Length: 472
Image (tube, rainbow, N blue to C red; front, side, top):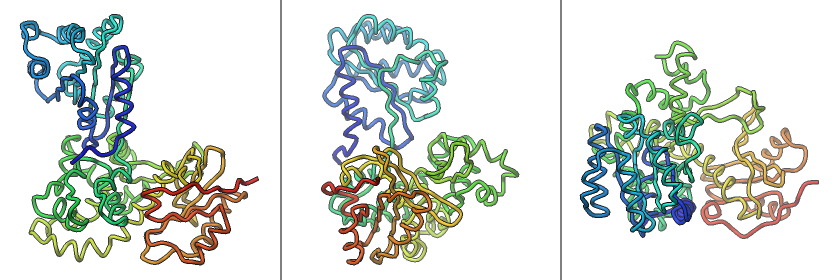
């Protein structure tokens, strides 16, 4: 399949490679987010050596790195004679005088530092020398251990301030996800984003010539499918004892969004103090996301917990509870009786997140002005699915309906009533709908420029600019 998305990231990397000075690039992100693929795509027209480290001894990693350099640039007696990392960087500096735009990628950099903790200091010394020489050389340090990679840039780390570009790679947006299946209907494209999320590794298994149902069975539900055990493999790769972490993820996937609910659901924890480090670790791994209400004050503790990865939410919601039946080969029955009837309920929460993403990234297509901040509001007697503020200070509120029925004026009336509890001046009101809107609501939106109706095609493709009245 052709490389899809990541346009801005490719521009950032290409621009950095082209600068007339040495470039030290630090790139990190979750496992499966496509870091290695992005790097290799960005280097397609350049001279580079790529080495993915393993959990082996430092000397073995050094030997395999030399082999990668030999494969990329040819063998030489000097390369064969190198005995340490200092020699490797001196060799690259020399090589850059004859090979323009030379790049070395050290993927899974944290593995190298496990057996050689002094490596960041060695790179600092070498990079200071390379910087003084002005060699046109790029070094990319890449890793999936987000905490470690962020620490590389901390005040106490020797590489602090040496990096010329830092890239924290996020999952693909829902529009990029839709580009994987360009011939699917809009509803199925949005459902794919709500179920698999934006991890390119998961999306790589999709066969766009078949529909969503066929793909879910083939890559998730069938015994031996590529993603059948993926969440367990993910936790085992990151954690020594994943059982309690898995129970927390399962609880959140099933609707436990506050601290007390999680504590009540996962019986292994006696109190909040015991639960806290597990929550923190899952947050560091970007598997769990902690959100505050958009109108919360800085010291407010009213927060909710959500799974960051839509696929994990789907897996813990549908696959884990039906694991025995799926292992027995009953994926067709599980899909028909335990998954399909509950799709719309499951997609409700996923659709809200997609609508917030639209508001954050694409609302300027309608308003001609982007959002400054976007979130959601929850109160004792109501929730607002979307809440935000534009760059010019105007507020916006929205409701998201993954309904089979058309959205009508009753939803707008309710939105106006709840939003009036937060702002006195008329806000921009956004209504998102899976199935469309009633004629009465469409007519009302024509007469009120502060009411915006956003259908699935508009979510996916954008529209012409609509002027919205500024409140006084």
